Length: 89
Image 1 (tube, one colour):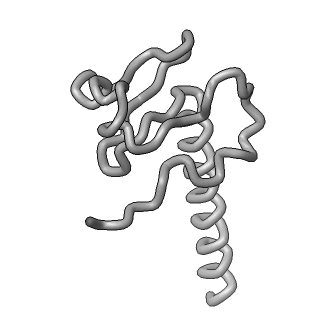
Image 2 (cartoon, rainbow, N blue to C red):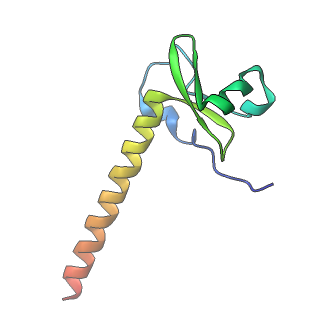
Image 3 (cartoon, rainbow, N blue to C red):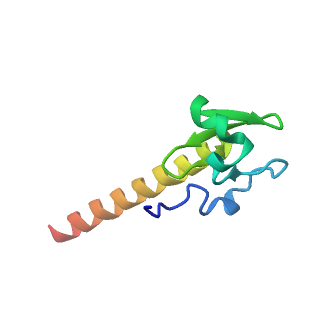
């Protein structure tokens, strides 16, 4: 089995509400395994998206936050690389 990093790594710092879990792991081994076939589920009024390569459910707002963080990191890396390239000229 390939050890894939969890999509839930680092979400503790997101600052979103904690009334419901940010995510759930090992979904295929639980009662929520039906979410694998539907692409997600609703749990306690919150929408969760199924991530197949990590077998996790992640709350929709947390997933949006995570994607925004990745986008921000890519933009920062791009600007750092552009600055480095200009410095070489």
